[in-house]
Image 1 (tube, rainbow, N blue to C red):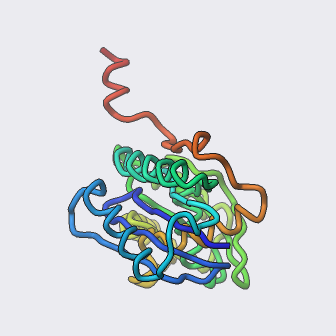
Image 2 (tube, rainbow, N blue to C red; image 1 turned 60 degrees about the vertical axis):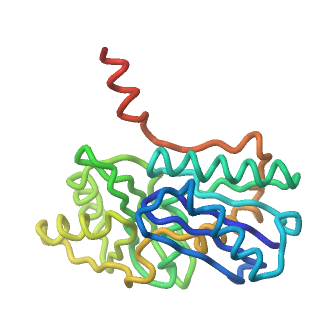
Length: 231
């Protein structure tokens, strides 16, 4: 199964092509330029380098959130457009589940963390054993204090932190006396390669959907919406 995967949920942007769980080509950029400028050139580059086309893909996968509202909208819109034009199904992938797959080899607990601001992180907890991930919590917006209390209550050991909020989480955990480790530098950030691998698992279990039905997963409304409601 060939999958074109997109990841635009944070500051970095990436795209990857995978076939049957093997990453054929990937592109990653974290230069501060907007995803609307960088995503499609990356997609075009990896397709050219693999001598493949969108029409040869079996599915288009994208990280649907949580994460940056603007970034998620760009990624989901791009995935819908590519899939609709080529009449291909899509796979919506949790950003947090994809980043957990970065470190599925690290037996123990995996704490996925994205800086959600407002004293919260976007988070999900997983356990990993022999490369198999088990989800322990749903995706949620939660405070660092609550996550620390939760992993302590679970008696979590061998904690690996992953995501663009991992360093923030590590500082809080260390202050609370919770032993933990950051994922290796090349695996700590979200990336499209892991989106592709997570999408393959979802596709095997009925996770394919139409381009029209693909939707973002924000977890909470944008700050501007909250301000409007208060006004």
